[in-house]
Amino acid sequence: MKENKNKPLVLIVDDIEDSTLMLEMFLGEENYNIKCATSVEQAIQIMGEGLPDIILTDLTMPEVDGFDFMRMIKNNVRTRDIPILVTSGLENIEDKQKAFELGAVGFLGKPYDRLEITNSVAINVKLRMMQQELEAYNKRLNITIEQQYKRIEEEQKNILVALANVVEIK
Image (cartoon, rainbow, N blue to C red):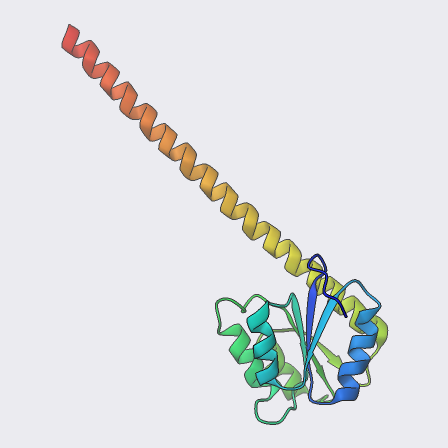
């Protein structure tokens, strides 16, 4: 699948190929670029090429599980704001609670519901885009405020010089 830089990037992390294929099929019909990883190690490699706009991860995977993966994501300054949707067959309340405590924005149980998956991804991608726009706006606003502050300081200096000249003339 050819990647379009204008489309949001969805990273799917699941060691079960059928789950990955189903999620990819559901989301492939939407307006997303999709990358899949069968392990956390592979997901980290993919993220080295470019950060996703949202991550869908299973909890039970060999070597590094989804809980540890979420810790890695949320403890990294570059990735901590990426929304994470948990996709898991685990339905006990403790796992859900732990996932939310680690920063998950949603918990999507198996078997998957197409509407639930597509809506959850769309809502969280939209929120992520709005957050990024707001951060960019804040940066621009801070630059403008700093420039205005420098102009005010310069004008104050000019006024003081002018007053000093008036006093010197008298």
